[in-house]
Every structure is written in C-alpha cells, then in structure tokens.
Length: 346
Figure 1 (cartoon, rainbow, N blue to C red):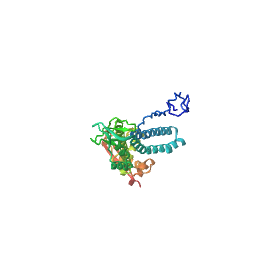
Figure 2: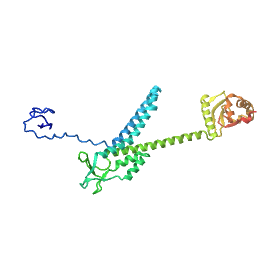
Figure 3: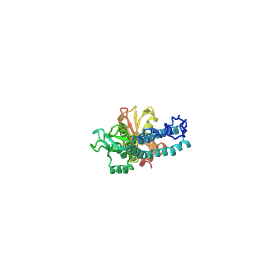
C-alpha cells in the first residue's frame, strides 16, 4: 500500500508511513499517489547594467574622499610608514580594481539580463505578443566594444539609449519582456530616470576633466610667461630693483628730512632712465643768491668720493647706475645738478 501524502510504498497492514509518519488508511489505498510538486521560488531579475556602472563610480568617489582625508592627516601629523603604504600602494591598487570592475560589471550586467528574458515581447503600442526583433545590430555592438578600449562612455551610453528588442510589427521600443517565470515586465522604452542621471554625471565628469586639463595648461603658460618676463629686458628688471631701493631709502631716512639748518633732503627716487636721483632744497636761499659754479666746486669732490669709494654706493657702481643730485631754492626753482657715473671714477 502507498502513502496518500508522499506516495511511498509501505508494507501491507502498516498503520503509519515509514517515510513521513502519516497515518495510513484502509487497504483500499493501494494505488500509488503522485506527490504534489514543491513550489519553486520565482526567479529574481538580475540587477540592471546601471547598477554595475554606478557601483564602481561610487567606490571611486569614496576612494578619492578617503585619499583626501589620509593626506590631511599626513599633513597634520607628518608622514608615517602606514600612511605612505596607504597613499602609495593601497589606494592606487583599489583605484585600479574599481576601474577594472567597470567594464567587467557592464559585460556581466548585459549577459545576466539577456539570460533572464526568453525573447518574447508584449508591445505596448500595438499589443503584439510574440518573439521580438533585435534592436541592436551586430556591427553596432562590435563597434562600440572596440571603442570601449578608447572611450568606455560610448559603450555605456549605447546600451543605455538602445533597446535589445523592438516590436516586429510596428518597430516600437515601448515593450515589455517575458522573463523565465512567464511574466511580462511593464512596457518601457529608452532610458529611465537613473540612466538620464548617469548621462548627466558622465557629462559633468567630462567637462571637469577638460577643465582640469585646460587649467593645467593655463597655469603652465602663466608660469612660462612669468619666467620669460623675469628673464627678459635687463632695464625693466633693473628699474624694478631701483624702485625697490627707492622705497627702502625713503622709508629708512623718513624723508623729507632736514640735514642741517639750510639743507633739506626731500626725496630719493629712481627715474625711468635708470638713474638714482637725490632732490635737495636750500630752504634759506633763492636761486639768484647762489653762484652755482662756486657751489658745485665746493660739494662735487665729496659727492664723487661718496659715489666712487663709499661701500654704500657699490651696488650702483656694479650695475653702472648713474647718481644725480639736484638742488632747488626756497621757491622750488632749480639751482643746478651734479651727475656722476662709473666713467667719473678714475
């Protein structure tokens, strides 16, 4: 006799099933019973290609943030073997894995999705139900996978914006696919919102990379320009040096300042012809009261000694910078000037 529950044959007269323990009925139950099928869980659809694209990108962003934190710690606490290992070995290795995971994820996502559906479609436009027509040509797919090695973005975008199947009756891509459980997915066409977000993200990334390249080029050009300017015409550089010396001297002597009861040093300045000028005012005299030739003969020897022999004038002698002393009267009228250069030093 056979068990009415599990269908196992038992000895005649058995009161309980030897396999499942169910109480046996009368002897009439001699016909073998087919056990009820065990229900199988529905097949879960694979993750979308978008998941395998976004995951490595998010991992990559997380690595960059972690890298920044590590560098901040290194700057504040100083380098250590552990931080150097993370910076030079661990993080580059993880970045390489993340980049490698991107193409592998795309390939696996496409393969897993193709195995989940049996090729039967339900058109949301003309209500056609039957085998779908391929929406991607073989040559197009071969081309985008060749381009993958040069620009993975093209391959990703191609599979996001195209549909694997189209309706053979009306060529619509607004279709649902039948999975291995016999259920049709909701009719949809083209990219979903996440696909659009990804494209925007990729577009921003491309703009960011291009901007970084352009800014790096501009910085190099700026540095080259500054270097060329610093090494260009000697008079320009010399004039800048003289202007800096002018600022220092005027600040040092706190000009204008009285040198004695009759003479005031008003200003020391560098002229555009690369001369250092000293402007004096004789505060108690008018120009008509001074005979310039006598005054010049009296002060020129001391000025010549200052320019030719004094250590404080060595810079001007080495650069062959003339010095010019101009004298004005109480009304700021020019009385005369004395100019000395290297050729006056014998």
